[in-house]
Each structure stands twice: as structure tokens, then as C-alpha cells.
Length: 194
Image (cartoon, rainbow, N blue to C red; front, side, top):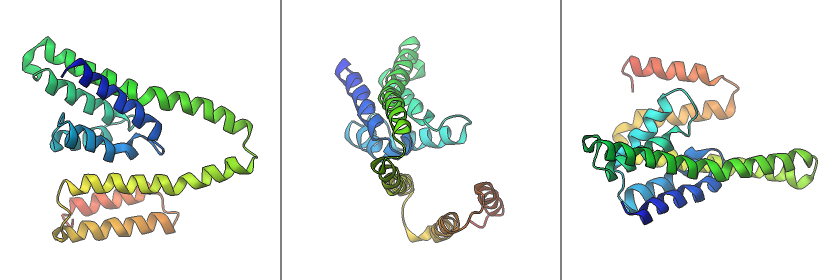
């Protein structure tokens, strides 16, 4: 990768940071478009693995951005077999992607939350908070679709689609705790039903 490519990686994550309403996971469709489709810095497998590993690991869900940066840098540096060049490129990818995704949103969140707290009784502030809920839900649905489409969105997996719709309805219409649903999902998977 050239210095311009590294700068493009940083600026892409800087811009996505300000669009990450609902968390960094909501920007996954655009990350996929840029990292996999346009620039081909990552393969589909590396992209999906970055998200899956980070979501399974304890800690903040933004860790998938660090893994994507790691993979971009590792690919650019020739892999781990390239020695310190590979490691250095991978660490540079982590640094640039995390700096890009965290700096603008953290600064904006700090300033906006202080202002919002001071003006929490204003009608416009309350309306803004209520208006963001559908945006976050739509971005999460788009993220789910991108991750699902990589595995083939055909009807042969209809039990999974049915289970997804049923769980979404339960979450929406009941006050059932999510841990019960996760446990039920683990049991259904362990029994081989889906």
C-alpha cells in the first residue's frame, strides 16, 4: 500500500466514525463496500471473520475495526512470514483504523452529550433522540443483511430465517430478557435443529 492508501484508510474510518449512530457495527455495509468491493484490501472471508471473532470476544464491539485494520495491514505487508515488515504494517493498520473510528465520534459524543444534558428539556432535543431510534434499527438490519448475504441468502436456510423473525418479534413485543433468548438459541443449535 502507498502512503495515499494508508491515508485513504484513515480518512474512510474518520468519516464512518461520524456516521456510526448506534455503534460502529452500523457502518459495516460501507466498510464492506470500501474494504472488500472497491479497494479489495480484504477478502469476504477476512471481513466476516473480523466481525465474528471480535463479536465473540469479550470487550467493546468496536474491536472488529481493529481486526479489519490488522488484516488490511497484514495483507499490505506480505503476511506474518514477512517478518517485522508484516507485523509493522499490521500494527499500522490497527492504529489508523482505530484512531479513525474513535477520534471523531468520541469528540462529538463528549461535546453533544454535555450540550444535550444541559438542554434535555428542550422539545427539539427530545424529538431528536426519539427520531434516531428507527435510523439505528435500519442500520442494524442492513448490517445483518450484509453478513447474511455472504453465506447465500437462499431459502434452503428457511429454519434460520424463521427463527430470526420469531426472535425479532419476541424482542419487539415482549420484555423477555435477551439472555433467555441467547440460551434458547444455544440449545436449538446444540440439538442441531438449525
